[in-house]
Image (cartoon, rainbow, N blue to C red; front, side):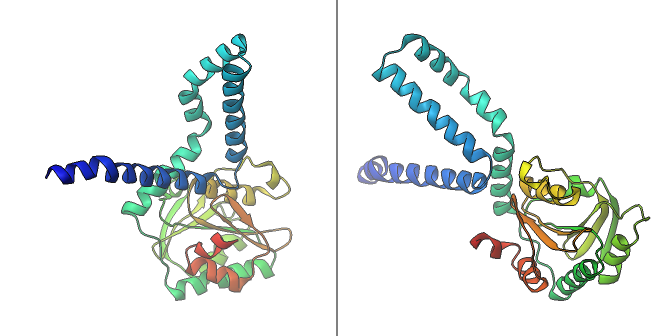
Length: 255
């Protein structure tokens, strides 16, 4: 028993410590990869290097005092700056532990793709969010509850009638049903999407805080775009769109 305890305290506990820290850092990097948070992390590393140099190399007392006090409040500062990223990490971990991806039947996928193709060919705008592991209930509640079977005709009737009250909002799909329509989505503050319309900003905004697949059809060009995990993929073909939905967005991770 003593040998087992000694082995645990000498080797196993250190291995577990390293594995847990590696997993945490890996999840954080996956969330902030390709976002503005990377620039913030670079700035933090610069300040950390400046702190070490000013205190231990150049011995600058005033600057060292200022930077040391900055690090005392760093926990609160980082919690404010990275509140979105922290929320995303926790939501993704919780989703993987207790959730399951929203798998849609092939027949329903076909209905969605046909509707998107119809909107694209007729130059009609559309916005469809497909829920994955992270729930969209907060956004579903902003629209009109439908709980209807997915169909090409229903999706086209929602978006093609510009005078309809549900036309400008988003349709949310979950568990093989159109949960709600006319839903409001959060707008992205990413300056690179200013050249796009409100639908694209809303799609990217939702993708920044959830793992949903958001399909956008441009009213100006008819082009199909997909937002997923903080990235916007343009000029998506209908065959590629079908693959994206069938894989719950996993196919986009290689891009």
